[in-house]
Length: 155
View: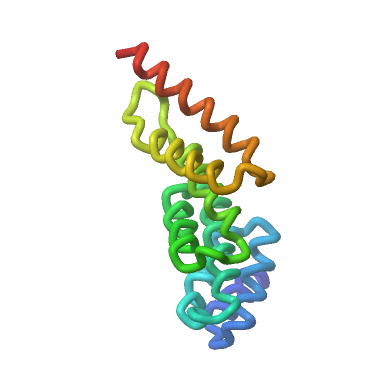
């Protein structure tokens, strides 16, 4: 009960720094909904500050933790638009493709997400061929191409 009471008190708080610190704590504890809710509340407060990058990337990661890949991709793309040279840009560019990869449906269904994943992974490996994420991007892109080939076979 005290955990719920503490969270409610944090939600009611007017202190954005407290909300930020608690959001990171909830994120580390894999309580992604609580983390995301707090981060959503303070996004506008930190807009234009150095901390804004951290808020946006943790918001994206919180949606990933909730397995809401569509929303996570949107937030990662917002990061890319707002911080094209930001400190998390490599992660954000990779994760957009990865979100679409994770959202790609069975080969019998519409393959829009599959094609988007391939598009974003292709851009990623062209920009960051030496990235630690590049190997995973190539592997997942290969799986996506196999899925498209299987879709053609089924047709």
